[in-house]
Image 1: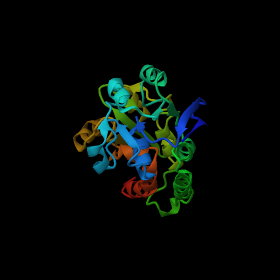
Image 2 (image 1 turned 90 degrees about the horizontal axis):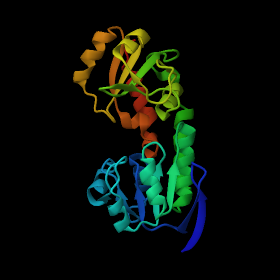
Image 3 (image 1 turned 90 degrees about the vertical axis):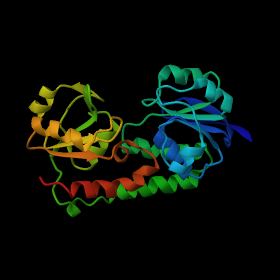
Length: 268
């Protein structure tokens, strides 16, 4: 074991005992990535939202939610590395953890950021070859995404991507979801920043061609389609797998196949 220093995606220098043997992950997609890289024994704590892979979720200690961490539980687990994310975790709680443990933070807005995180995480946990192969595989799938195999052209198709209800919130510019939508050829119907609240009148005025209702963080279901259809009767409305649009770890390997199947069901 030796001390090594790594730079996280917030340009912070993080010194750890290398390689880490007691890791706590505070973000679902990054937890799944760590398990994908083969760190079953090293991962000692995850959040209650880190549900994949299911068999690991059942057996690993839970340290609260992404926004409401159980700091006492984390201290008891004595991690030599904590991995979090700027957007998904609470800043005040992360600052508390930094006082006691090495905390490496990701900061992700685009697919490129996600691939960078994957490679950097691999170096951080002594899985460089595995993480570089994963990132390369994901990059190839997105680069080779064949628009000619789609049943409809997505070019200039305007999409409203809903992540929440009461109040209604959408994914707009400066988000990972928005970057994915653009890579699929879509145009975001809301030229706003981050995750704005919108009113029904805003949606009616925007009049998107397609409305995506995400399965997370708000669990939109088929029953919600009716209310959106009353507002935008001409729109194609779909419940979509939020993990495929917002999880930026190893799940991206499954993403392009999902997108292709989703778009090929359109009736535009």
